[in-house]
Each structure stands twice: as structure tokens, then as C-alpha cells.
Image (cartoon, rainbow, N blue to C red; front, side, top):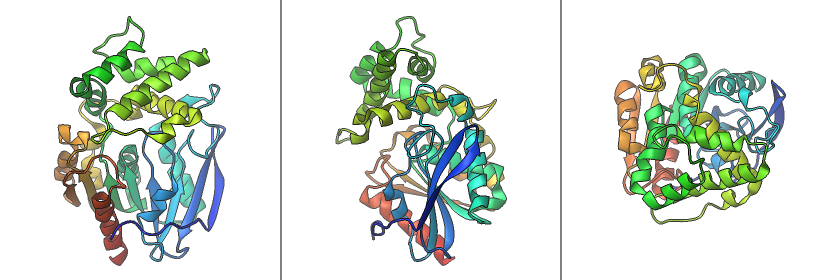
Length: 321
């Protein structure tokens, strides 16, 4: 099956969402089709053209957006003066509602990858009447134990690159504390050299934890992308994903009952490190309207053939319904 062929948007624009932010959006596929919005990961990755290919363009009106501070949205988080205090989960959820109304959409399928799955879940819990279905991959819920796994936990599996990462952080930091927050403090330094070293340290660490085969990530070689990505990820990871009190237990999982009546498909690679905490399984069992599909020998990358097949099957299914 695979992904649908490459397509170009038929409309796009910049939406003023307040706080000096303008969010870039685009629509492609069938203008009269079933609406679907694609939420990218990171936080701070931006939406790439590949996100257009997970839905049948003949059946769907496909909406892509770059979340605050990344991609083509402005101001960009790579700029030191960009105010990150107005880049939170609540702000992104409000932006989605503004965009939905701006496009005249009543309900849409919400597709999310990695951080995009956290945002999709919280958006659906907050605005259930706006969500027809959820399709999620690289499933995460943004809980504090998930953040600890991606630093301290994986540090035990990848000790050498973890030590290199720690070596870039201040000597007086609590090695058992929130390492993302410690890195974010460096990324907010007025010294550009300090910021650049911290951004490189964070992206080198993320690259080292990609399941075999080891590979470089070309976008991390773009200084603007690297800075914006590292700054945004650590901003969220260092602040409980802005999900509020109770995130040590997992706010999204706690509120899974709010998803009742929303059909959902969870597509998870068996080699995705998120599985180490059983997060997708726990979410599936707390959300009876969901289906969990585990893809053997796949990791966190939604674009690998078997993952793409499962995701396209899910969106095709919902288009037929």
C-alpha cells in the first residue's frame, strides 16, 4: 500500500493567533473531503510535505500547520528574542481551535505523531465535539516518567553518548534531576556560543538514541532548525509539558475517560522506546474506543513501510466510515 503520492497544497496562509505569533497553515487534497489535521512532533519539528501523504487526497481535506515557533510560523524559536512563555500546550490547543474555525470546519480527524500524539490527545480531551477520530503514532502522553525515560532511562542503555551529553551541562547540576530543564537554561543564555553548544548537545543525544541502524538526522545540521527544536523540546520537557498538576502520574492517561465516544487507532513500533513504559498499551486499555496496532521490528519513525501501511489503512478506514 504505502504512502499516497506527493501533492501540493491548494491553499495556505498565516493565521494571527495572538501574542505576536502567526501560524503557517496549508490545505491539500479534496476541498470538499473529510477534514483531517496533521500534528507534527517535537515539540518544534514543524510539518514537512510527507505529512500530506498519510490520507487519501481524493477523500480528505488535509490540513497541515507549523506549531508556534517552528517551521514557517513566526516568530521562530531559533531567534533569541522569541518569547517562549506564550508557547505552551494550552496555547497550541487554542491555535487549533482558531484554525478550525478559520477554515470553517465543524469536526476533523486529528492525526498526531510523537509529541503530536500528546497534543492530539489533550486537544480531544479539551474539545471532544471537534474531533471525529484520532490516528496516533509514536504514541506518547507527555507524562514526567516518559521524559525521565528519554534522558535518565535511555542513559543506562546508551551510556557513552549520555556521558557526552552530561559533559555539556553545568557541573553543579543535579544529575538525578530534570536534565531537559538544565539544558533549556543554557539554551536561554544570552551567550550565542553557549546556546549553540547546548543545542548541539541535545540533538546529538537524541540522534544517539535512534534505534538501529544508527544514522544522522540531516535537519539537525541546519543551525536554525537545531536551535529552535532543542529550545522548544527542552522548554516543554522541562515544564511538565504544561499539562498541570498530577503529571507525575500522567494527566492525559488520568483523563482518558474524556475520550469516550471518539474512535481511535494507535500505531506503535515494537522497537519504539515509548513501549518501555507500556504507555500505548495503558492508553489503549483506558480508552475502550481505541484500537492498538503494534508493528513488529519498527521504531519511532512513522515513515517506515510497515508503519506507513498501518497508518494509511487507518485513515482509509475512517474515510469509508
